[in-house]
Length: 444
Image: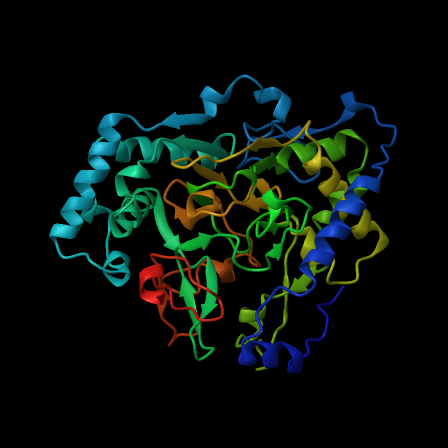
């Protein structure tokens, strides 16, 4: 299937005019929920003893059950949280504080100063080796790690110090990437390497009856997905949690791949791994300026859900984006088969991140999601997380050709931004409508 022909007028106009809302998102998530609930994954007769196996990652053969540490189900890890959790100890917290003090003493006082830092500028004598070990574990082990005890309260009145501490941890894991493209007040694009995840965009007022529900925010759940691009590690630090909902969920894509084969659905794995057949719309901000070899707006990009490449299986799955395109009947079945397994409590882990918790997931092997969020009235009752993408120093995985443009096209890496556009690290949440990133005090 060739990529669809692009149209430029609607996309370009929406970008120029600043209309950056995700189109029909609530409709798509309702449709996603309905289809997952009603889809019946039909198994086929198969002699499971005849299934071929390969692995671990680095030695994967296509269309075989993969024997790898990242092949797990939720039931396998029940009662074993200590195995995938690291609690920061007092010395770790002291080293973060000392590194923050050193950076400030050296003149770091703004987001642009933070962007110039190298890991050598943020020494963590005993914590850094632990972070390196965590990076290797996430890359080559289960594919996720929970780090607890980040000192949120210690930096309650010091946003620069808080961001410095979280950013400095990331520097010891690898190279930060542009994980979001946003807009200045004049509509021009900038790349963001630190994102604030809040109720902000696409939120709707929660109107359940009762005085306690007035003014609360109902943030719709997310479908299971991988983040766009070829990033290795995704980290989310919880600054505050909503009183209701907002559970983070992780599921092993390797386990889903293997389950399809065990149920005799090799046909679905074949279609999910077929190249030159999966094309999805680019982000609006990417379409607004990207051009193909002919100088036309590309509009669509190849995103193979299950990609076998040089002995590795890497995944890229976004059910909502597949709702924007016409699929073959077998592709349609494959998408909902993956979503059905991912949504099953048998397969996914669900955790509510508390302030000071950090989740680190391996994007090429883990699908992640988030349950519905209902925020409270006060700032401490509103879900707020910081996110970065990291190209991991521990990664040895070769990148498939259609992943590479998001990883290697610029020094910063990640999403592509125009050469003349700035890269930012906002200290505070900002609106995609203004792109200012000012503190609440600055907006008064």
